[in-house]
Amino acid sequence: MSTTSFTPRRIYRIVAIAEMVTWALLILGMVGKYILKLGDWPVRVFGLTHGIVFVTYAFVALLVGVNQHWRLRHVTAAVATAVIPFATYPFDVWLERRGMLAGGWRTERTEDPRDHTKVSGALRFALRYPIPLAVVVVIAVFAVVSFLLWLGPPTEWGA
Image (cartoon, rainbow, N blue to C red; front, side):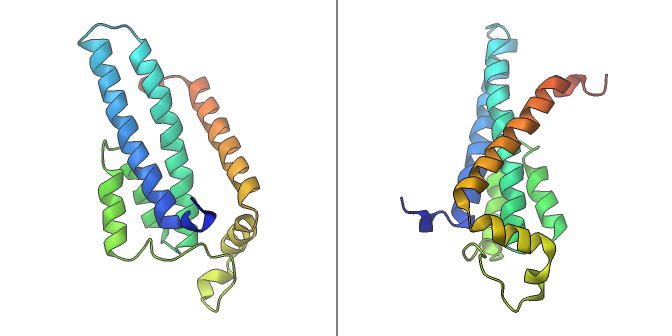
């Protein structure tokens, strides 16, 4: 697969589907733990997998949202759909129908006033170096997931 096929739409869709798949795995892990009495391991394994993909989805939604000039409410809605099982792909379809995933990566500044913000400029700079950008995203996902693991299970955050 060439690098030109890694469009915002394609990356967003892949991660949205992965997020749904990991939701299914987490639910199966809960069935394994609570109904089949397999112990904690299914929830630990699939919970961690889901957590990593959830955080990755949030970063991808932010990157794609900035690139596509989404409003903050659309980026927030994208991340919020990851909290609801199987909602990321329907949201992806909703974005697609509205043309909000069309086009490539915005590596050049245009006359569009939205391209004149510091955030758009930072993204354009980062997109010029896709390998280091991918490394930074992986490190950021690792850092966030590590912090969340340090906090403990979400069910204990309010305790």
